[in-house]
Length: 180
Image 1 (cartoon, rainbow, N blue to C red):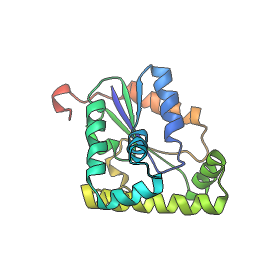
Image 2: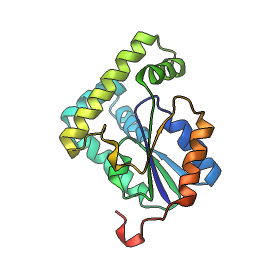
Image 3: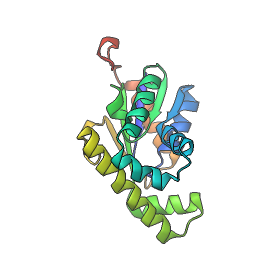
Image 4: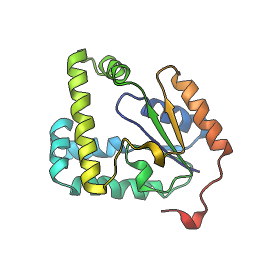
């Protein structure tokens, strides 16, 4: 079973992907780590690297190459906003929450003040949305491509994970010949 989990910053994707992968003993691949590692290799901040990626599409192409390679395996949770478009998963999930809640989670997690967290979140989301539209002609806000969309505002990470596991246990896998 190959599962993708995506969502905007602060929606809970990493926490939920870790829980689901641990409970099902699946490999968890976080595509944000691929992007962050590339930024480190270039000795750049994540914000500066994101701005560079808007102009230099080879950065996203390298992230994609690594995602596709890792996503070819079974029993995997591929986490990232574009993961759903990199492979043909058995189940694709999008997590969301209102921006105020997502920013609250981010500022608590990263010890930023709320205003700074809000600004950084908006900049990051706009940068990524523009990049994905330019490179892939994908509107990341169009949720019609997902099997399951969950608003994590009033659910615990455990509750969201239980919903995803129930979906995994009840969905028909994509035939091997139809996989990308």
